[in-house]
Length: 132
Image (tube, rainbow, N blue to C red; front, side, top):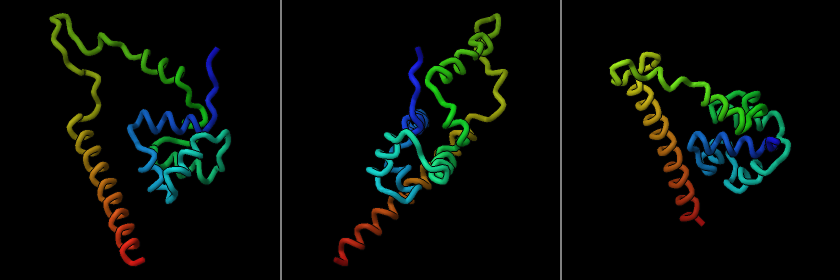
């Protein structure tokens, strides 16, 4: 029997799959890492908070609500592994609808922006500590 995940655990699993740290999500939501940790333990979450989380994770609120590990495994199992090879045994991605390098550069740019925001937050925190 499949385990039913509460909404907070679903958020945590999606965040983990996307390689996003709690600290980054906390920064985007304007809360502490501990608040995100508590959020990920919650069975229910306010719609407004769920909307913000979904937006940052790049998914819909419905995707979060309907997420399950089993559904994710089933989704990945629907890919046809033979679609990437021809009869000669050479590999080519004839189903690729995007340039992988473009996607890589998008991720690099997103990470750069996140790093810059985290760095700015640290600078502000240091300035605040110095002024005390």
